[in-house]
Image (cartoon, rainbow over all chains, first blue to last red; front, side, top):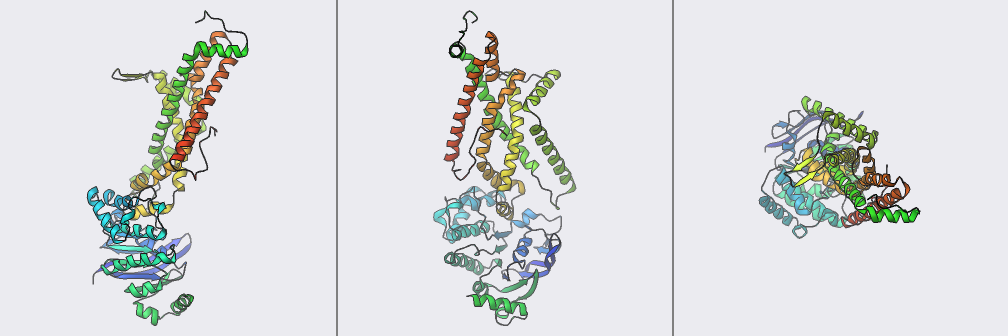
Length: 246
Length: 261
């Protein structure tokens, strides 16, 4: 399969502290990659580097043949092809649900408003939020917000979706709704990169699991190997602890 | 008008002045309200233009020309705010007024003979607008900084430029949060327009001084002026309080007050 995203020797520093150390990863089109690991291991920073919300210090991120880290890269154009879903939803507080899903389409993609509304309504329907189009973000529950945030990102027809712990701020009851939406996305063949603590979801949906610890990628493999026969001792202890906790 | 004699008593004097000279007081009130209201609104408009320049951030990806442009913009905007906030409006007023007069510039505005605004009023509005904008820039900047960083990140992740994100997402939220502070500026301006009397803008304080000079008696007239100012600021504050509530700013603790900086 065709490679869509390639990360080479990525380094990121906060002040003097090296938080990402020489990360390498290749993502194929249609692949679902789950990044797991203990808190503070740099998973979210890594994901945020992928669409340059954090500027890496060195390395290459090659997306559709363009190196995003090069100064000449047209970031705004490349960013709109990478959807991002945040832990804290980050719905636009000054807009209602429908306008949250429209603004990117009309301002960035320059779609006509009627077309944008049609696309937004279709996507909101898929996540079961079509009844809430006139609500503002503050009136929605966490799970509802996250489903709207997913629709907002999908409305841009992204080539890749980045999920930054999308269920970490949710009540246990609502996690299922959001994971179902993500399962459906995975089945449509969209490329997903997901930072998550949901091991069952990772095991079930991912094609590739990336295990990170202390700013390094320790292991990259398919879920069977990672969960049943991890090579690294650190992976073993982490998984043991996480699974015991349940 | 000099035919009538002002009574000796204090209270009688006040009643006499109100009765005989209320059209002049009303004229003063009119200009005080017009200048402070349009001054605040135009000041807000100016602030909305200058704030994005002042809060520009330089990114490693910017081209060299853009970096130079941004740096100059930030410098100029900072200078603008510092000078205007660091000097009294009265001094700004005389420099502006005599400066223009020295250059022989006429500020009066004539809209095809339908609406004529005297030069002195235009000057007054200009001075108040520019002065107020400096304060509103700082209010807006604080308000923008207080908006959750995630809002900007979400906008950028959709591919919006920083300017688009500011105009469509950040500033609308920031503006809503600082309505009480902008209302505060309006109330301050109602009081501070009195300094424009030094350049003979016919606002309330100037009109009062003129009335006082007819009889060489000061206290009665200024007491009337003080009461009028109090009524103006009190009603404005309550009105803004009400608007603020209507807009759902209940959680905001700072309601408009007539407190000066």
